[in-house]
Amino acid sequence: MDEKLDSTEETVKDEAKVEEQEVSTEEAEKTEETVEEKLAELEKANAELKDQYLRKCADFDNYRKRMMKEKQDAFDYANTNILTDLVAILDDFDRALAAGVEPDGSAKADLSPVVDGIKMINKQLRGLLEAKYNLSCYGVAGDLFDHDIHEAIAKVEGAVAEPTLSEVYLKGYKLKERVIRPAKVMVTMPDGSVSAPETEAENQSTDSETSEN
Image (cartoon, rainbow, N blue to C red):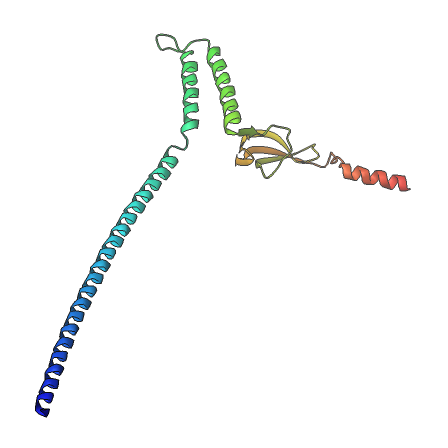
């Protein structure tokens, strides 16, 4: 009787072990499938990220090339407006020069039309540059010398109270308030024969001292 019970218990234990082994195998297979699925998902996500990265790189490269081209175009064609205006001035020069030539190509005896034409073009060009491009010229004999805007290439002494422009060899030009070419001038320096004019402050000081006395 006891032997039958022992045999039954062993059979039950063996069956339990078999069931445990089957459960473990199933769990292992499930775990393996889960790992493979996760690996597949990670590989898919990695591929998508890699594709996005390559697209971003391509977009950035195209953007960089486009910006470089626009920058180069801006540099190459920055002077389009002023050159278009100057072409019209060149046409006027052609007409002025043609006015001094006979039909056979020889020069006319009377060149006054050419001179008048050049004067008109000069006035037109200066007006255009000043009104549209804020370019102004300066430098006239009699102006006071200013080392910030004038370049003295010769000096003489004379009856002046302050350094004064006696001759202008080349006029100066300003773009708005910036000097882009200083005027080249001859300067007359004071020889001591003329006293410098009193300033308003000095006059007020003198008047004040006189009233106190």
